[in-house]
Length: 262
Image (cartoon, rainbow, N blue to C red):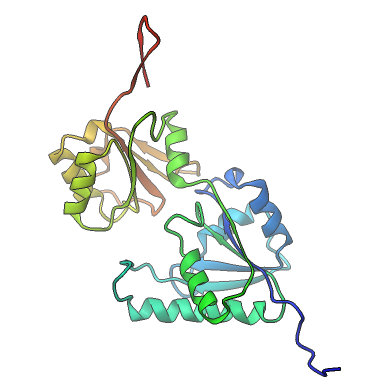
């Protein structure tokens, strides 16, 4: 018999979407897994920073008695297919090493992330780094309600209907590509607009799309603000939780006698 006292199982990694900000929009599955997990690995934008995902989850689940791993994910642009910034790679690897240390001891780790884990989330950068070293680690991804869904719902408006083509665009990237998307597609959601609001307003005014745009800041949270005229947001310092929805056309549904605008 081996004298090796190492655990016989590898810990399970859970990537858990906690929704856009309103803790009541967390799914039952997210709450259950985060309740059962004794270790939370929480993302922050800077060293010793505050984790928004932890704050949301903490309103539904007591985090006392848990081990909280604070993982720093610097907020820098990532261009897939291009060389990744060295600072980002170092931060991701450091975070992965911290999580792997617990997984190797047979401990399950839950990573709460804003919105949905599959949409512009740091969760998959972490997962890629972990799988590079531990390709067989068991993983469960728990989907969450997205910011764009919450924003549209708060306005009693659809994101897309019928044959609408919907695009989800990180607003931080180049303007020419954004102009093309706004010109050719029916419905566009702009994420991460807080640092570029003035430039975005200029583009939408240029394309005569301001009447079709709604900006929602802190959707479903204390301090929520809705800009039905997005020009009123010019010059403002918006919260990170700010999303813009542009739906260019009203859909006319006919029942044979009259049309209903949606």
